Amino acid sequence: MKTWELLEAIGEADERMVQAAELPARRKSGVRLAALVAAMVLALAVSVTALATVSEPVNELLYRIWPFAAQSLKPVALSCEDQGIRMEVLSVAVEGRETLVTLTMQDLTGDRLDETVDLFDTGNLLLPYDGSGTCMLADYDAAEKKATFAVYMRFDTERIGDAKATFRVSKLLSNKRECTLDLTPYLALPLAEAETVRVPKLRGWGGSADHHEAAAMQVLDPAASREIELTEGVTFTGAGLVDGALHVQLRYGDIIHTDNHGFLYLTDGAGNILELPGDGITGLSWFGENGDSWQEYIFDPLPLPMEELKLMGEFVTADPALEGDWQVTFPLVPEGEN
Image 1 (cartoon, rainbow, N blue to C red):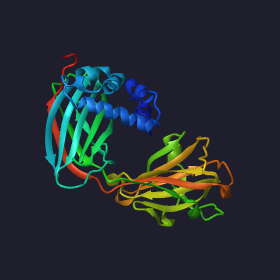
Image 2 (cartoon, one colour):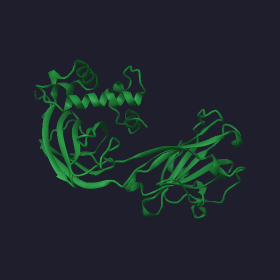
Image 3 (spheres, rainbow, N blue to C red):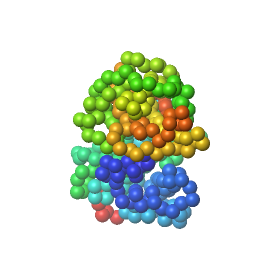
Image 4 (cartoon, one colour):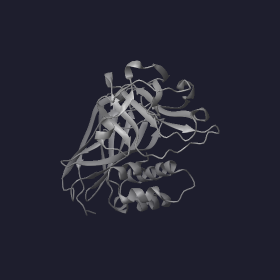
């Protein structure tokens, strides 16, 4: 899910982010957003007086994304160190209930960061309000071993009036690996009705169903796991029919520390991705031992006979996150201050 789609889904989308995502471009939307965020951070990382020296295209992009930030950026330039990693908060912009913090994370002792690094949902501006937001990696400098981020947050208050705030990070996830695999050979055609159990303690589900309906679903029996390692951190545990629907079950290892995840989809013989109607429940998940996540993917109805389909999976895995305590306290800029 793209950044602005995530914010919309949780009811916290800011119009400027949606507009930025819709700007005309020649490349894919994900590349477009990355370029926009990079432009934001490049402008945010300089002082207000130096902003005029930034190239005109960068200024234009920043103004289209958030004009207030372009006019009211305030440098912070405070840092801290833990676990051989230095965090420096570069600058902050505050408008009403919204904030944008830019920062860098730099490895001073090794090569533990790379271009896949993220803050593992721990980048947070500590204020006495509920809120939500998103973190965006704008740049990674391999020579400096330094990553630059922008963290946007929107809080449940009319206006942020606090004199100061603390920005904190507690985890860094890096060295992510992506792969696409053909899972069709593991389906053992022809498929038969499988042994099932009621879904264990439900963690989440996908599709158009409520919690009560999802919690009553039958899933493949984990005790009968086939234990086929697809890639490090991802295990194929079974596949079969449940009331005529194709169920495919995987286990993602230690997601609390690795964020291992993926998704499955069907293609025809030519490799074209086949869309399903999307009604009902499309997936279920629950926690197992050692922080593992069990995921059951449900395909119903099948768009073609199973013999004419391919089951594909795309996966992202990583080493366990680096944990630490990085925090910087700085004054917030009163709204409207020049």
